[in-house]
Image (cartoon, rainbow, N blue to C red):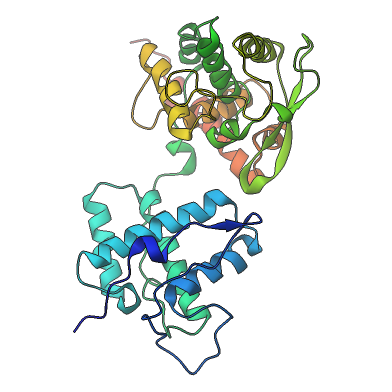
Length: 350
């Protein structure tokens, strides 16, 4: 007889205390497989082990809320997949993970997406091994597959001409219009990530928000590493105009910079989905929207065009917030491939 299946909402609640994920509570009926090993305080089963692992091990015990939410989401999906097959996740074997991987393939998910999902499930079972609840990790040898495409060939990039067309589609006035123009400018002219734009607060502005003199921004990046981004005159002019319109509309210049202005979510920080929708709206208007061309394509466009026009690699790395210079170097390779195109050596015009 199958053991009672835990409720995914009970075993994976997202609770925070003093900025840290607390140990998740799960049904007492789920007993450890290996009872001889002393378990950390509060850990009674595989789900508690996962919570303990998130709190103590991921990112050296300093995982961001975004990271924790991603881990919960993917493990929750895995539990639902198991539950639909009358399988308890703590009893899963390698062939179950292989079946899950094949289903991800059939759904058309990219190798990168499959790798992301499987890596989190791998760490889910790693946490059980870590505290002695399992002797093996069933996901240890289950991989997403190899992607022969080089990193620079994966980049979705707009040409300068296409970027100019996108800018022409942006409004110059109005509360929402100025907001949208500023969002696109911060991505395409300064390389900010979508989440970094979402996190921006008025308190992130270094300088007088009402000044005509360009200010800079303290950007909360990956792993909450803060970097300073200096704004161009035109970007600051748009941002300052947006601030002025916000004040005129009765919004205080504090907390979230980019907020909703419609009936739904008025005054609330824009979600990442909403930022996607804003960018896609103008990509569609400029007839530039395609598969993979969205927010991150603007960041890639910034990196590539900057390098092509002579930007210093180290300065670009600092501006984009890359931990490794090799990551920024992808843009150099992309530009060089364009310059070294053998077709340019055929001196016949077709």
